[in-house]
Amino acid sequence: MTAYILLEDGRRFDGLPLGARGEVVGEVVFNTAMTGYQEVLTDPSYAGQLVAMTCPLIGNYGVNDEDEESARPQVSGFIVRESARAPSSWRSRATLEEYLAGHGVVGVRDVDTRALTRHIRSAGAMRGGIAPGDVPAEAFLDRILDQPRMEGLNLAGDVSTGEPYVVPAVGEERYHVAAFDFGVKASSPRLLSARGCRVTVLPAAAGTADVLALDPDGLFVSNGPGDPAAVERAAETIREVAARGVPVFGICLGHQLIARAYGGETYKLPFGHHGGNHPVINHARGAVEITSQNHGFAVEGGEESQVPGAPDLRVTHRNLYDGTVAGVAHRSLPVMAVQYHPEAAPGPRDSRYLFDDFVSLLAARRGAGS
Image (cartoon, rainbow, N blue to C red; front, top):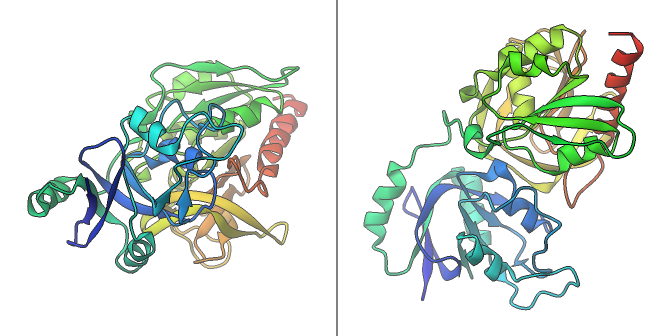
């Protein structure tokens, strides 16, 4: 059997089937991480996307029961150059092939991922699909072109929890944090929990009243898939909660939603930022962090620390690859956000201090008697 990837511009890449057999369509992106493929597969921010790994060997340490960021794979499809057939790790419970097949994820291997990546870098991320080799390409292209583009899509509700749930604090409970689940990775509530926070995770459909009813010490706005411009309801809640002096911390999609809540704009990147090796400068510390990123949209930035349309925000971090905004903070309220993943698993861990900074804001508010 054979399989192939077809892009909306007609470019085709042939390979062999991996995981489940069938046809899938979505936006094709590439990820430059050398490890962490199980975290990539289970990251809800990849909903609706076919992910190509640029590292030439994937699956070499298998899959396990500890490294998942959600209960199941979230990618629409998976693309690799070589899939390891014999994983070598004492933690492994299954091969990548078995894992994908068991969860119904359609993949393709033995693909020239270098050529695919170079094409996407030049032409931009685009709609595409994976199909068995005997599926006529012309008919499959029609299906791909019928797939909506990522712009304008609100996918957060598709990956969010249906009901609130609580992640208890580890040890003594110091604070209570409400967390919007727009596609939250398991590591984020876990890192807050490890810092003495009880975390109440709320569905994406929750509103201002739902958050305020919890009387939380802080609000966490999670990562997630889709276009931030389509997630309109969050803006009111972010502004209302922050106006009461409650600290707010957003990452990835949460960062974009916070920027939009205060008048900023977002736009679609040519091929997005996906990988574990993005250098970001922290202007306040004068230090460069190596970060994990996964986003296809970004916040419009201006000169120096300005966010056009959002005078109450200042730029705190920038991506050193392309100068895009990688972090913002409110000029007078306890609101902070970054475009990358400080909870990154398996890493890098340069930015985990941000969770400590957020907890410090919680402590300052508690100390002020609010």
